[in-house]
Length: 109
View 1: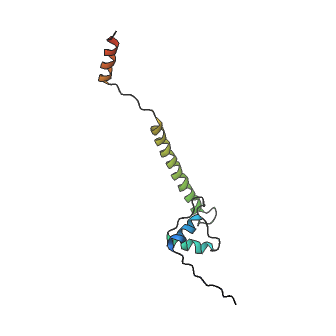
View 2: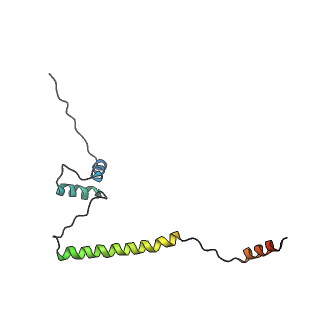
View 3: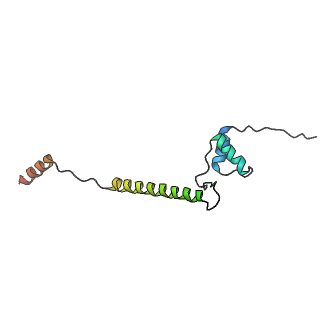
């Protein structure tokens, strides 16, 4: 006669967070997954699109979308300002000492 071994699995917060970070939980409903993410502080995957709570094409959705576009454009402008400054070659500054050395070298035969 064979008996089945019973085992229990212990799920820690860290393993639950890691599982939620890997992607959407297939066995949970969206509501359950959202609750777990909020309780455990697990962020959704970076590739996952953001949820929209407003009904489609409502005034609220249009206003939120305009804020998102405005913030994105400001961020792009700030990035564009930083990029040329980082890539620009340093401009040499005139130096009296350097000029003195160059003159002395030119005088040498």
